[in-house]
Image (tube, rainbow, N blue to C red; front, side, top):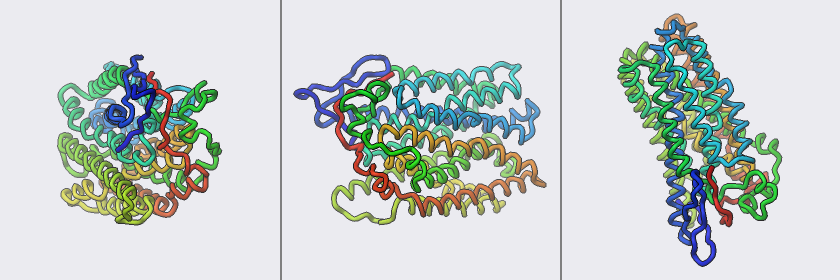
Length: 477
């Protein structure tokens, strides 16, 4: 991986302003320190996404005790879970648009503080269904821009050709968050009750915010914002495509963006439905205890994260092969490969729902069902590829705004289908059948239309590199 560096005056280090306001040095020439800072930022953002998805996971892990204590039906609980996404998409769009005027390091800090504060009212013993719904709405609004803003920030540290692996690491935070949260929060619920599980993730979010305040910083490829964006002479945007003026309409109606949005919507449907209903499914249908269900959810999350990381490593190797003049081992477009994986996952989902054999469900869950989330990495890098740097935050935010709608619909629709079934098992079979159809249709669309290189040429953005060296210093909150 080669994050971009920059030289200044006789080998002296360029300044990168930290979140605390200090100005640590960034090495010139070999860019060793820049590379280190780029990957430190990646790991910090991985932790950010880990906490982000722990916030989402806690609701599903606490499903049974919450429904029991508050006297809720599954449909009511699905409504409370969906409340998280009531403002999620709008917040994703609004927060992403702010990347044009506010530094992403500031936005990330603000989001972490807001979502941590939104968890605390649940600790109050008198807090009931109404408080739960309101706090989930506020939490969703705070977390809506998290993924697009974090990606936009990350891409300020890496060149276009080197972004797949750090993107996979960042988005693996979703799987890591579930993997860590499932057993940890399951233990918290077992020992101290479900309310303290909400409080625990809020406290961890405050710890992350303190660390980010000290170490968060803008990368050397970050486009300028505010006055620097409008008036800065030859700023970062000048070398990363800010001069390429492509209307948002053309970007958002391109085949690549639309296929990326549909593929991500399907993947997020499976993710959101799993976060809300997997624990209940494995307890009610699979006959597992909460501890056993939590362990299985953790293993599923780990296999999903491993699949995303493996995909990132393979893409990085293919980039190195191309740089060495070697032909690709599988000369298919990324859309074709990713779409076929989704089609396989769709077929496996039907099998998963149909079989009554627990060990086979586990094999399918940890095998073919684990590759669905790869499209999230492919979609993000594809949208970044076709977008000028100064519009990347908005196009990524629009992508999140669309696929986050699955977060609203999946828990509610799945809860409704399960409640409407003759039995819990038959209800879940119908819900997973719908999921399988959605994943398969999205896989076909990704296979046929996700072509970032072609669309970048058509839009005139193929020459806007993340590869150009910058001469402006990065900045922190």
